Image 1 (cartoon, helix red, strand yellow):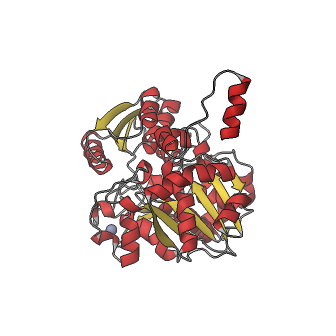
Image 2 (cartoon, rainbow, N blue to C red):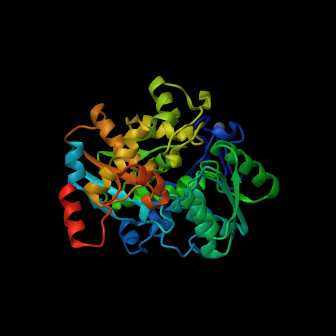
Image 3 (cartoon, protein in one colour):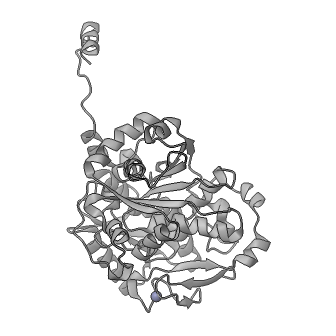
Length: 413
Ligand SMILES: [Zn+2]
């Protein structure tokens, strides 16, 4: 593919020809998650911002900046180009100048992960591979299953048996082969990797496949385009494996290389306190290659990761942009679900609400100033995990079918 210059390892800086390596850096092993780098000087002459605006209302409006041939087919589902809401009441609550909400819960399967899955499936279509497999805490799997169903590919999914019911139901409805692993996400990930390598299935595993970041970077493209090719001061992203924040960084990096934006915003990563490996590594100055697995425990299942798979790029995204990591408790995450919903109308699953809780934490710690503008990346629909949503609010008012009972309940409210 002429526009891709190389695949480069963020740890050892080795560069590989685009077709020489399929997954991670052979020298560094699985911690060496590769960047897909383009010939930016050539792209400057062939791609322009005005042409992007003419494209479809989906992530494929940026096809010329994605690792696909121009004539290649893409899945038909409308992934990306999600709403970007101005949210003045959220801004007032956080005590900042401006807040925008990037509502990726409105993707076809209800989460941000559709971006990565659509990209990987498009790539599998180019390669002519029929079976695609992934391990997931739930959302990436639902995304892969849904996108595969849209084009008739075969998905094989490894999820922890503890994943929320709605996410497992979604997989089965889309017709995926679902392996419920009686273990952690990290164990499911390793099983999936081994089976892909043994069976020749295309592996969508987050960060291991360099194309996941390329799909996720389209969220940064959209934020910039939806602001008239400007950027906010800060973008807040909840973080498990680190691949979404790496993707957001990569999107802004590409645009900066092309001269389409004049700076890269500070990126703030939010981790759940019980699954905060990247937060601690950032705080203590630990290198990605020296990080050790922890026993991850959080109700925000989508950001539960004992050893974050994209730790190298997840740390770099924050360090390179002079951003920060913050950690928030499960209690703060639960409280953020109704608070965000009531201030904005956006219903978030726990990992998604964590971005709002984390923005408040970052504000308290001085990582965001009152004069600044902030975009919150909202990664998953609240309907994905009804049990936690119910846990975050009280019960409704039970009434008899009489006006008297209704009026009485309303006065007791
Ligand atoms: Zn390397």
